[in-house]
Image (tube, rainbow, N blue to C red):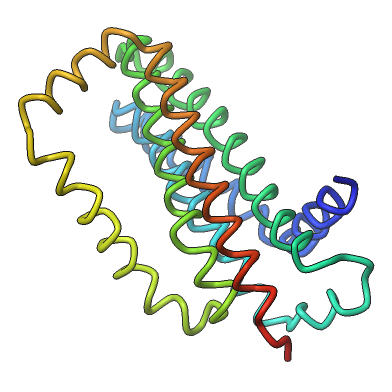
Length: 218
């Protein structure tokens, strides 16, 4: 576990020069949300920026050829994979808390009400979106690097959504009833979203580890 944490800290160090950009992605949308009186805009852009940021991590590694660094530090490949997922997880959770806080503050500043159910729905949706983005793309980027994988991952994400959407939307009435029930039970909705997100990340991490173990580092 110590090695995984060390790997995650290494990811944080690699990205340290990019944090001001991520900070701007919180402040600027908040100001726009206040000016346009749309509080949810602040949180939505913050989460979207974070999703992009955790993918850009691979571009930074590729540009700096840091894969060679992992050859001299006492980390196994499974530690590198787990550390990168842990870093994305921590950053994602942090961004959701910041997004919710920014939305709440924008709501208070503008006087435009955002109720608890809407906030819970937003947080659950943001969590699932971040988890899906990481889960669908990380195995590809671990194998192909960012410059090649960036052309494949958008199509892959669409295909996965389409495959998952067929059974979901085949019975629109049941889906509508389920969504309504979840909206009336925000706690269960949040727990379900948490479980689904963690499941996606776990399966993705196992696939990424298996693929990365077979990759030849250059």
